[in-house]
Length: 376
Image 1 (cartoon, helix red, strand yellow):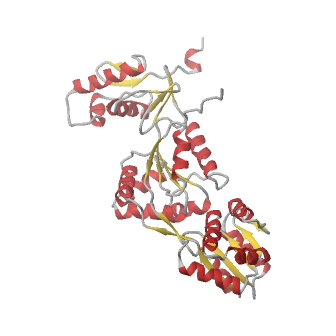
Image 2: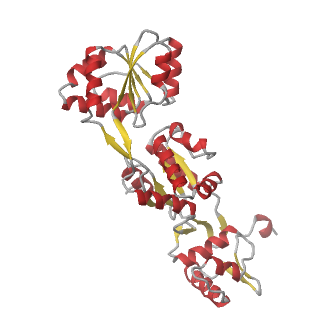
């Protein structure tokens, strides 16, 4: 029997802002205990029936390129599929086979190979900037260069090659459209502003920019940016290109070493697994948005109990007054008895030893003794 997957993300609420492969990303994090919220910031619209794409394909077949830059695997596959539907796949593949094929990373190379072709060069950094640097250093004057773009369209390659004397043919195989659910998108930025989300994941630069724009439009941008900059809520981007709109706003997102969905999952899991826990007499304690994990076990707490425990965990070892407890509880009660009842119910779940009463002052977490305290 295989070992169960560690519930490292138990209690964490993850916002997935992507439409494409969102289910895959969400499922991978949910298997590790996360609660998933889904609010795509953009939709992806295929261009299989786009007349401009087929017109551009016919022009390439009639006037073959010297170099073809493939920026995304899904885009290249969509291009070949669209050409096949139009009866143009055989002549297109023949033209591509005679050109120098440049791939922006392994996924683009894999798509080229799946079409029965071989990439002549692969940008290891998986960025358009590296492609531009290498080709411009080699010299592109007089060359015909076809660029298959990602959904955002031009990424600077067309202009750079044209300025250096190349004849550039631009092909956008899919494009970004409006979010499928505007209200879900607006609700997602408000949820981050209100501290309901532990981590926001981004898988494309246009998607990241659109999500930040939604925060601006919803009037919660200052709160959202503060939380992301201070890492109260973690921003996680699949790669440096995706991260750029966040960096431009002063956010330093979590970025994996490789621009892969699996690498993004591992980076997020590793980040939360490495967070410092509060060492209590009942074991390590971590409190996230949706749940608390004590000694590796998720506590079955109602929202009021979770709020009180979070307050105590944010001030480990310090006394929290009954008035402070009342402030985090729902409602407007100022009766100290309400705080006492909330703490009593918390103790029913956690055990009485975790939360101690400090007479006439309030409550505090019972921390594990340090080596100094237990030394003879």
